[in-house]
Length: 78
Image (cartoon, rainbow, N blue to C red; front, side, top):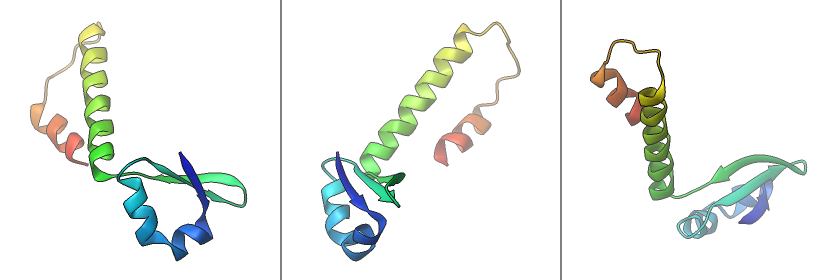
C-alpha cells in the first residue's frame, strides 16, 4: 500500500484518486496513520463483507430479536 503525507495528498489528490482505483492509499499526519483512500468498489466490498459477517454472527447468536429488513437495508446503504 502506498503511503503519503496529508500535505502530499492535498497537493496531488487527483493522482492519488487514480492510484486508489488499483490499491488503497494510506495517509499520514505528523507521522501517524490518519486515513485511507480507497476506490468506491473496494468500499462497497468492505460494506458487503461487514453485512455478511453480521448476518453470520446473528444466525449463530442465541439472542434472537425482532427481524427488521428495512432497518438492515437502511444501515447497509450508509
